[in-house]
Image (tube, rainbow, N blue to C red; front, side, top):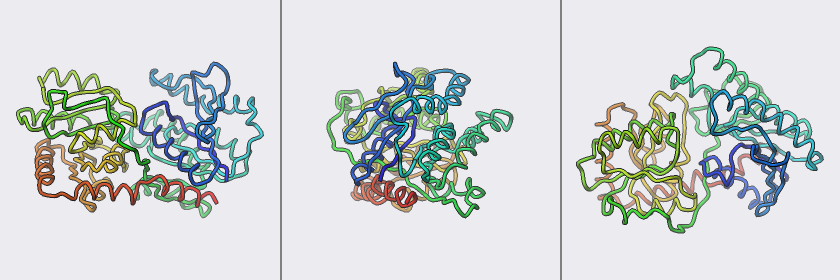
Length: 395
C-alpha cells in the first residue's frame, strides 16, 4: 500500500516530533509499505524538491517562514502554508501521484486545506495523529483568553478534525475532547500511543565524568525547555538539592525558557547543575547511560493529557522517571502501575524533593527498575504497534 505522511517536522530537525516522524516512516517502509513524507520548507531555492532517503520519498514544498519569528508572522505563515504547498505540489511531477491513505500530524493545526485537496485527489481515507490539543492547552496555561484569537484557532482546529476518518489521541484521557466529533458513525476515535524506535548506544559528546558533577547520582532532563514544560518546578528542585554533593542535574536541549533558566542558576549561585546544547538524537542513549533518573515536567495548569517523547526515551534506556505533571494526567497512572518511577502533581517543591529522595533510595534497593522500564517501552511504545494501528484504520 502507498501512504502519504504530512508533517512540519522531520530530520535534520532534532525535535522529538521530527524523530517520531522519522521512526514512523521507517517503520512503514520496514513493514513493506510505500511511504512518502510531505513537508513545508521555507529554505527551498525552488518550489519543490523530491529525494529518496533509504526507501522513503521526501517531498519538500516551499512555504513562508514558519520558525524563529514573531507570533503574528508565524501565525500568518502557518495560515498560508497549506496553500503554498498545494500550489507547488500542483506545479510538480507529483500532481499525478496517488496514495491509498493520508496521515497527518498535529501540531500544526493548519494542514486542513492541503489534506482536503489531497484526500479528494486520491479518493482515500485520512488519519489525524493528534499530539497537541491546541488552542485548548494554551487556554489552560493562560497564554490566550477566550477572545478572538482563541476562536480563530478553534475554527482552524475543528476544520482539520472534520477531514479525518480516524483521529488517534495519545492517551485515553484525551478522548473527552473529541466526544462530539466521534458521535458521527463514520468516524473512529482511538488511542494511538506515542512511539520511539530502538537506538544503539553509539557514545555521546557529553562526558559527565569530565565535569564537576563526576561521581554524583545524576538527574537528567533532555528536550524542550519552554512555557508548556513547567520548568520552574525542576529549577526549584535543583535549588533544594544545592547542598547535597551526591546529587547532580544535567539539562540538555533548547527552548524559549533556556536563557531565563541559565540566568536563574547564576542568580541562585547553583553549582549542582550543568546545561548543554541540543545533541544529535543518536547521542541520547550514550547520555542516558551516564545518568540515573530522568526528569519530566509539565505545567500544572494543563488539562490535556500528555505522554512526552522524553518519557519514552527514558523508558527505552531503562531510566526511572521523576515527574511533576498536571493532576489526573494519564501518565501518573502509567508510572505508578508499571512501577517505573514517581510522579507528583503538587505545587510544593518539598513534595517533589521527597519524591526524588525516595526514588534514589528505591534504586539502591530495587534492581528491577531498568527491566520494568524497558519492558514498558517494548510493550507500549514500539513504532510497529503505531503503524499497524494506523494501517488497520485506513484499510
